[in-house]
Length: 138
Image 1 (cartoon, rainbow, N blue to C red):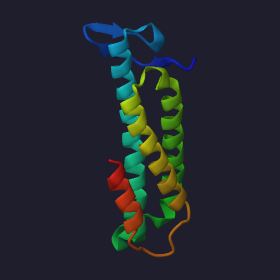
Image 2 (cartoon, rainbow, N blue to C red):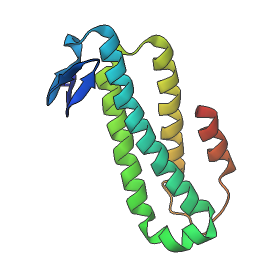
Image 3 (cartoon, rainbow, N blue to C red):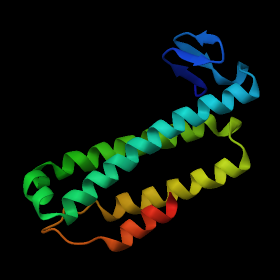
Image 4 (spheres, one colour):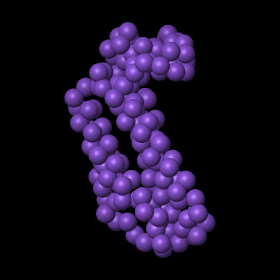
């Protein structure tokens, strides 16, 4: 698959695009919509992964129930973050400057947060610094 194709049926306006879409052949407004949808999906996945790890790292009941799966949660977060970066590179050509600025802020914040969450916590504790950065990003 080339860097500007998307798999899956996508509906843009009244047209259904089949299994592969070459984003550079779409009208500009449709390409931006498709890029926004794809990036929103991966940003949402990373956000959920980060919140899951924060919950395990900071809440006693979540810590007790899920600490053995923390490395699995981290692996998922890293994979989803990698997917986000790949999509960002793929759709960079159709993203306007304003959206690009916002996405770069999110990318940098997510990268920093995931780095900080790499160490498996020994006990639940507040992560106020991470939480404030996360909320400041969104």
